[in-house]
Image (tube, rainbow over all chains, first blue to last red; front, top):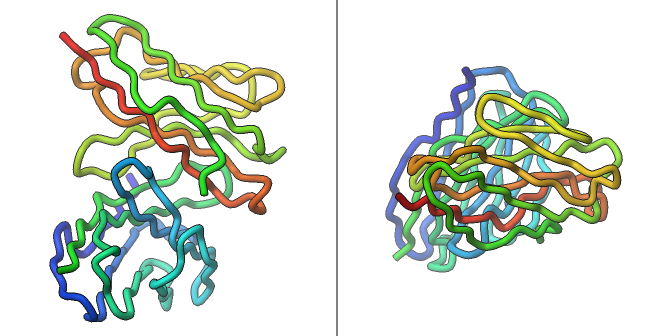
Length: 112
Length: 111
């Protein structure tokens, strides 16, 4: 079974802080994604990566950046956290096109 | 923004069949349709995937018409534990085959 591990289940930070959300997968998948999930809006894609050091913007990249230095780890960075970034953040991975995505259990981030 | 459309919510009773339809007019030629289930405080979990016609596994069936512009997830004889949000996922041709989730359908199964 694919295991996708997000570093924190719950996180509380203050406005203006730099925030790192980490995601690690154990199946050597090339493709990794970061989503945020908000009530009534479903899952929205922030960034994705098809290979090490490669990244592409999703639907809502503003205010975020990502880092993929190793294949198994994909980090989401909030350079200067704001209250409108309070959300559930979900990491996902899959092996190749048209294969199912495997999700972590999410990080519930609160920005005060 | 998502280019798929699903009903926001559906209610059902234990033992009934639940059918959820997803519209995806801009599906890419080579893309599959995938459905996920999500419980509170968990990540989405894969249910079923198909390309055309009908696919069935131990938990659900997926019906896809010839034009592939919609798909219907069928959950036979639901139980209380099937209460969840169900998402359909397809490629978005208008956005260069970027994967796009639908808005999700909240299914409530009542006793």
